[in-house]
Image (cartoon, rainbow, N blue to C red):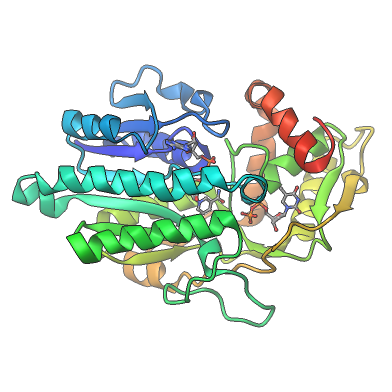
Amino acid sequence: MATWLVTGGAGFIGSNFVLQQRQAQAARIINLDKLTYAGNLNNLAELRHDPDHIFQQGDIGDRELVARLLADYQPDAVIHFAAESHVDRSIHRPETFIETNVVGTFRLLEAVRGYWAGLEPAKRAAFRFLHISTDEVYGSLGPEDPAFTETTPYAPNSPYAASKAAADHLVRAYHETYGLPILITNCSNNYGPLQFPEKFIPLMILNGLQGKKLPVYGDGQNIRDWLYVTDHCEALGLVLAKGTVGASYNIGGRCELTNLEVVNHICRLLDELFPTAASAPHSGLISFVPDRPGHDRRYAMNISKIERELGWTPKESFASGLAKTVRWYVDHPQWVEAVTSGAYRQWLQTHYGFGS
Ligand code: NAD
Ligand code: TYD
């Protein structure tokens, strides 16, 4: 069995990926995660007795730790999810985004380069560094613009997007300069189980369940291209197995929706599940709040390349994926209880001016 070093595997997408790939017994996984506010070992609870999932708390920027993990476990691939990932937090406090997403990725690359250079030729040739990135590096589209392709020039608008763009450039440069066998994926907005409820969809679900305001930024007409998280994880597995070294792949859901359409859809699902709730119809909770500074108007991904070259296409429709997601949050009150701690309430207070 192959061995992978996964970074950020206790976060939303990373934990979905680790669970999916361990279920398929695709590889032994060494999971390096700092367990920031966004990292959660409860996400990995079902792997507690899995001998082929080895969790290590730590920072991707800790050179000695990363070098030791690489030397001890001799991975065949590094799959790099670890990042600060929330745009609003990057506006309040950009520094940690530079530390983790830029400097952390740089240090990880340096450690991996040293390890990779020392491998015997066959293992060296087969090695892969898969870097997980975002559509936000491309900036914002106008209403009639064609969707982003892999050759769209980078134009990041938030500190988060800029830090991810910088990381993408570093990863690419390590291929061009040192020959490190890298792959980059740029994905659109994910949703699904295990997403920390600072992000739009789980925030709206949980606030709706609790009869709290649903804070929609600006006019609610910003467009995102939504993808169910397990579809993203399957795409990553394919890119790792079959992607062209040095290439980047766009991943998306071909599912452009305005924020208002998404929140109304959530409200309808909550109305169906809880028709007699005091807050039904839940759309009455929608509250327009001041816009996010530099708020990108529209994202849309052209996914022809990954469809054509690797045969991937999204499986889940938005209707089925959103229904599953709402059901998951309703069915996991203990998970919700554990993540909506004091630090989470503090964030709501700082950012929205209301606690949970
Ligand atoms: P997340 O915030 O839920 O999880 C990030 C994880 O990284 C957490 O477990 C955290 O503890 C860990 N981490 C943070 N700093 C670390 C450090 N210095 N060292 C080790 N671990 C650290 O993020 P997510 O939504 O799961 O996103 C994962 C990746 O996918 C990110 O790189 C993000 O940019 C990218 N991405 C996310 C989306 C999305 O919609 N969520 C879309 C496209 C791309
Ligand atoms: P988010 O989940 O933060 O993802 P991103 O900014 O990376 O796309 O936000 C998705 C969209 O929802 C984005 O247009 C901002 C908007 N939004 C709100 O309207 N209200 C909120 O409280 C949040 C968190 C986001």
